[in-house]
Image 1 (cartoon, helix red, strand yellow):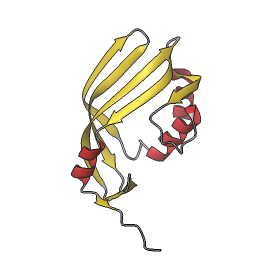
Image 2: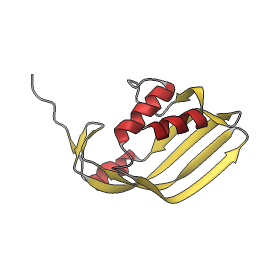
Image 3: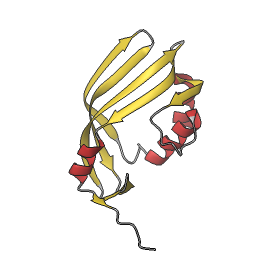
Length: 126
């Protein structure tokens, strides 16, 4: 875990804002660290199949198609079986002095739902 903790400290400003985190997540670097721990990329990898990077001034956008392994379980109101899917993804960054100060993510979650065959989670009656 220390590996990505150190990398985040090197790449990001201490007050980095990660706009891609859930509203309930801890803000900034701590929320990003928690997300990375939970995602367990070592066990559930993601890789770029098609990748493009565009930069202008203090902004960088990395976009393309990613293939990812899903470990199975709930996501956005669906219960997914374990499986692999591809989806279009874009990450945008605003830099300050060469370090990430803000981050955004856009993903085609509908493609994930369709490919993994997710079923809506039915609320338990009260």
